Image (cartoon, rainbow, N blue to C red; front, top):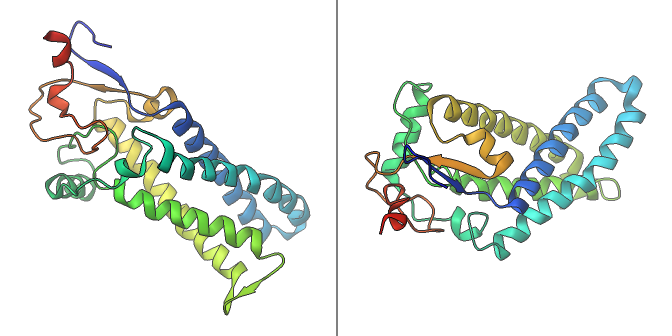
Amino acid sequence: MASATGIQRILIWSKWQRVAHWVIALSGLALFASGWLIDKAPIIADATIDIHLLLAPVFTLGLLLRILLLFTDKGNASLKALTPDPQWQKIGEMLRFYLSFGRMPLPRWYAHNPLWAPIYIFIIALLLLQAVSGFVQGNMPILAGIYLPSLHGILADILFTIMLLHILAVVLHDLKGNSAEISAMINGHKFFVPGEGESSPAIDPVPNISISEIGREKKK
């Protein structure tokens, strides 16, 4: 969809990708909270354990959906979209943007952030390990010499830190950018201004276009 000013509103995130994202995000946040209460508020531990156990399958279903999309989706939810050829210039620009706390220019990209894209695979692996350790620890607290409840807690701390960094990054992108990063994960659409000094190809190979090329097909 194009406006009179040339701004393009383009579907980036599919319905099922957004469903998986929000199921993981919301149930994961509730699991962090209930897990923290189990440890810090023993007086209500029984109630919070029940909540934790009810939320765990919901989280797992969202995670399994996201993993399924890695292999079945033809767009930006695919494994291919998360493993593009590294664009070191854009990665360096993203690092400078973060390290300057948003004072340096924010690079543009099509779908996945060039710095975060390869990290998402690692995050999905951590989420899967967290889910497995949570389900197994009740019947098998020690596996291969590893005390699973401790592993579950360590993974929770790591994932909570990553979640906070992700939220801060997205808010910073939305404040400094013009593509509506936050609302894009709700309605699926991002905004692009064609030809705004962008000559490099899009970060994601799916679809394999340059941001500067957006909208030109309609003019031919």
